[in-house]
Length: 93
Image (cartoon, rainbow, N blue to C red; front, side):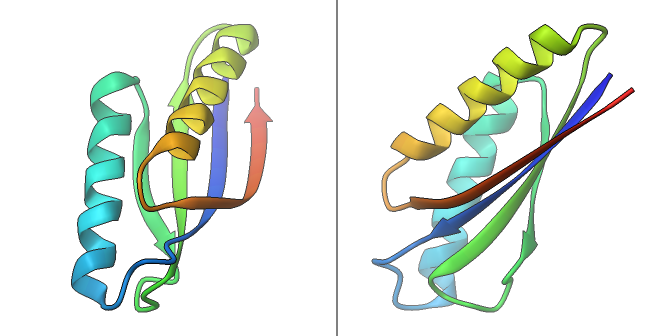
């Protein structure tokens, strides 16, 4: 089983790309270290206050993937400096 999630975020305090990249890099680092996922910024690369993260996970049970991605989303929600706008999750056999 493979699961993918796109998380759209607002970064309201960012005044430039350097600030945005610091927040995004920190968040992606936390996701990669705490969970067995791949993560990257996939959209709005040049906008200061908006981004989309693409996150993927692989496992042999869908229930495990669901729990893992729910935990990922909870971590993103509480990360300082970000506001969750939209989440889109897909599962593949």
